[in-house]
Image (cartoon, rainbow, N blue to C red; front, side, top):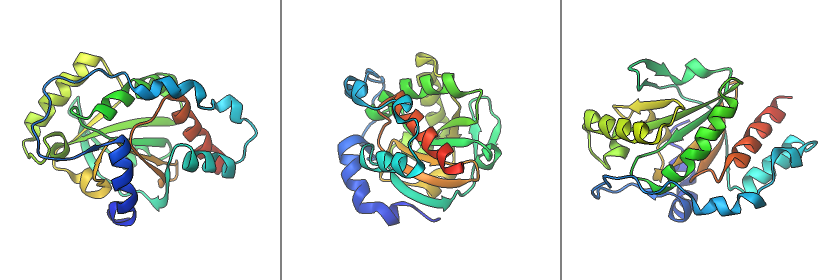
Length: 224
């Protein structure tokens, strides 16, 4: 699969300018900013999954591409190993058989912080179903080029404890995952189907629960 940025570099630059955080070596912020996203005001205009009942995979696919600017990947996922906040080693392949939302984020990134309440709401609703969120924090991304994984972990733990998020957080200590799924900035969201195929890449933050649910519906429709 290689580094996806080689395929989509021009599109990445535009979308990250519009909705993401480019990675630089500037000093990261010590205190997370307010998590409320301006895009929440637009949530009422987004179609809910109920409104899309009866739509086929092609129409849902078009909505994701044209309304939410998803990029179509359709390549097998590449495995990696990371560590959760309990110290357990986790492989991406451990979750094969589930729809995976693979999220890359950093504590200093405003769009990352803005989408996390949506991710928490989504996780609380779907955690007992065939869907999982894996929020990966890579050391070099968190430290904007730094390599001290203990310092990165400290920032992540402080952030998660402060805001009380419960979805799985993975520490990519040696940037193993980031070297595979590298983008020019965060957040970056990959959606992987149950067979381990990376179906979509969304550069930038999810706008709300409705968008995430529509993504699940699109993946499930593909499987029918």
